[in-house]
Length: 72
Image (cartoon, rainbow, N blue to C red; front, side, top):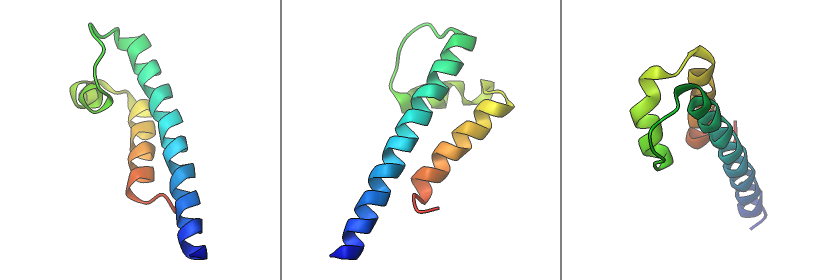
């Protein structure tokens, strides 16, 4: 049960870190590219991924890494 609690806390921390980074990245991309409409986060990244600059792509990769392994 203790291990479960540790994993739950790690997962929660990772979720909020990912959430904050994702929102900051979307805000940065939106201010630069001025998209025509709002859309779900996944659709947004799918549509604009090819237009991310080097720093934005790095940030995107960090967000994905959190998703893949929140304990790292």
